[in-house]
Image (cartoon, rainbow, N blue to C red; front, side):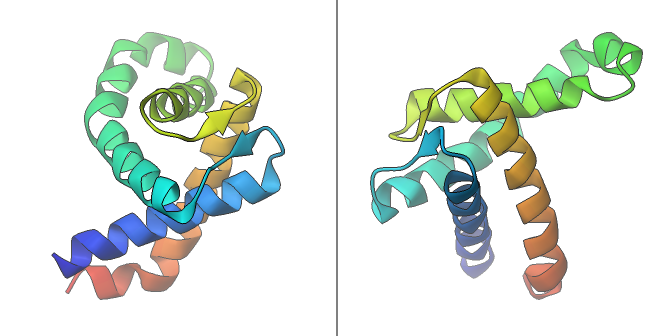
Amino acid sequence: MRKLLARIVLNMVAIWIAANFISGVSYPSIEGLFFAAIIFGLVNAVVKPILIVISFPLTIMTLGLFLLVINGITFEITTALTALSSRSFLASMQAGVIITISNWFLYSLFGKDLKK
């Protein structure tokens, strides 16, 4: 349970970083950000692998750049299900990239504690 909560908090921090860097992305409150982190984690666990499998030929043709679009789609799904707001799909793609980079950095710092 503690590991799950830690992963949600790391996701929450990554979404907060994205909202602060991109002017088109905003969140209503800390509670809304926490709920969005839960939904974003679920979308990444369930929907994103399906999108990756379906778009595999397109991802290969674009040398992996289509994964940026998939990140944007998963963020758009999260904004549709939560109180997060995104002004445009480009802002969602940028947020997806920043969340991915932030999560990579945060998990490299704190991830070894989550594996125990």
